[in-house]
Image (tube, rainbow, N blue to C red):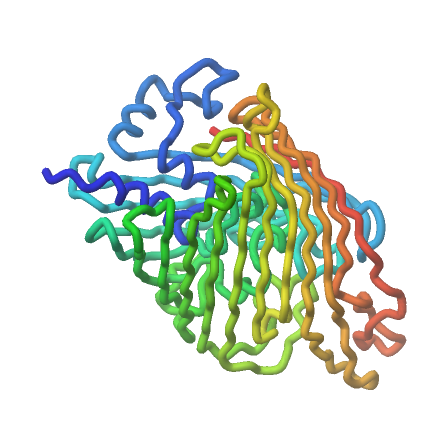
Length: 444
């Protein structure tokens, strides 16, 4: 059998940064750690399963599972105080058809996840959830779903195609600020540009992968056409109501001989929208906005190391930032930016620890709420937030993260009822919320 160029294998792994899986899992897919070793040093809690897992790895099949649990409380400000506990389990399987002895250039990714999602997201008064992990596969309650089933096929070292059901939160990747709240920041607005939440989490779609220089570490472009609807809990074939077009390019930089990335992307959707995006509507209690057909988002982000301890493993300390602009409907975030500092492996004896400090600001297109008797009232304002975390790797498979957030919520007043039982905006203000949290993750 013809050996597929090694570059194609690396390309699909790097592509996962954009459309197949999270950056952490992509790095493992490119060069997975062996599962063997003693309990305190091996990469996973359950090890190599008597050699079966390492044999599967050699044949291009990996099974990566984790459970992330979070205890969080609004200790001051916001809408409601108190603490909440929730968590999420995640299983990702990757298959390399060439290593499996089939044909070159084929890659299958399957993701299964479930949550028990009690969280403080509705208690802060913010549009941006302070616990990203609680949103997937669906926010609220107990959910198990298959958000991703994609197959990609490289046709040359320069290009490939991909199709299936996509985990779109993997878009807008950043070395220091990305993911589902299980490894880096917890706040949604420090993991992804919130204007991109107009893109459904788990839609059907297809697209192309382009490698301009053949080297995926230097440049990669993805072009996708997705259904404008999609849920992790449904197949999606009976829910086509518009299309969404997404283009994103990412290049590696080497300023001052230090690693970094620059990313630019854009989204256009021709769907007819009648309310806020599903995940945001739950936060502001489901109030509908004016009907809007078509929407767009442009977004940019960068990460840049200032000091590197290991170039190959992307360890060191650096800065990151995001900027986005949108039509302001159906997601009311019209302009957005974030800035921060992140790092990993700065302490020689603790090379798996990582940390982050970030700030975000969202300029909100303030919708109006029609209330009986009271008439038209506006109920949102611009939103900002600060977060700091330190991820302690007690072992390679056991991570504990204290976290603090301070959020200036966009919601001005809580909704209440007047003497006639009609819904009104209560006179009291929703103040700046301080949120403390502790996250722990076990990698199986």
